Length: 431
Image 1: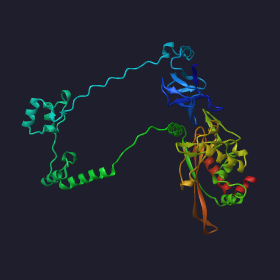
Image 2: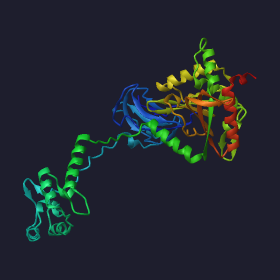
Image 3: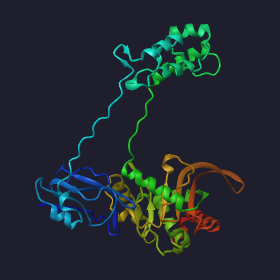
Image 4: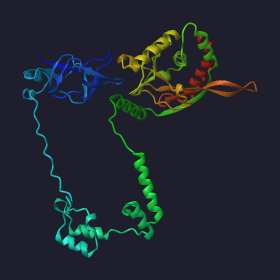
């Protein structure tokens, strides 16, 4: 029995999705579990599978934004009457049978100037070529069916001829070099011919090739979101250097009970500090600023297709052990494409750690609709002056990008200073 394919609801907050990339065409056989199309939401791209088998009789929506539970296609048997379903979907009964389009006829291709060994040239053009001492086999015809015309000969004869030295002419013949391909305003010399031949051989040896492939659906979403962020937020960057000695000691002290990462510790510390700087944990809505008494921390995760930002909800109220466990779980499921839409939405601040790649400084792009993001860099052993003496310390750069519509420089600087204080003395969190 024929039935509608509906735009699915893939999360508690989802109200609509952008339907893209139909994997099946009208008339294709569909098996239950086959991927029918992709759906882009604000944070995620999902493959939508068929819930029944049959034939894809009608695609009702091509590629556009569709509200949840709205029909986007009809699946039924090959000869089933689906006119009633089409009427319900707002279509026409006569659309039940897809129109068979005629294959476009191939356009007539002009014959080449040469047919076999015979060159198509008019008698008048042939005589003109002889008079002007033009080798008409080198001329491209523009006449009917590609024939060479008298004007073609004259235009060829009027082209400026590059001067070439006698030696260069001999070398060009020996090396089989077409000197017309050597573009030079002055006289072509032997060295020019030799260089051209060397470059030609190098190109053959290098075998340069270029490859084109369409962006993946995730990459298109990332590109769109990043562009929107840059166009929306007047961003300012702030950098500060932090001594991570105390954080390392904290990790060592906890390792017998739980293995935590620097990211885990940072998420906990940043979540607590943000409560004292609500503007960095806010959202702009028109002419209003929404502040919060909680933190939903986004943690950027690199995946093969791009970047995802799963969210640790209410991270300010969770202990370091629970934060660490949740970050590991979200990261693993992000890399295996098993996150839900709800786990990718609702973030109020984001941490992006590139330290494991040795990056010492970068400018992260704000994850809209948030107003700030913290970039975490590599820990580098550096000489630091302590009580007038040089001491080697494990130092880390932190890179904050903030939306200047909401966060003034003084507020951002104060936040970074307080964050540095808590990272260098994490025991302050107990006060």
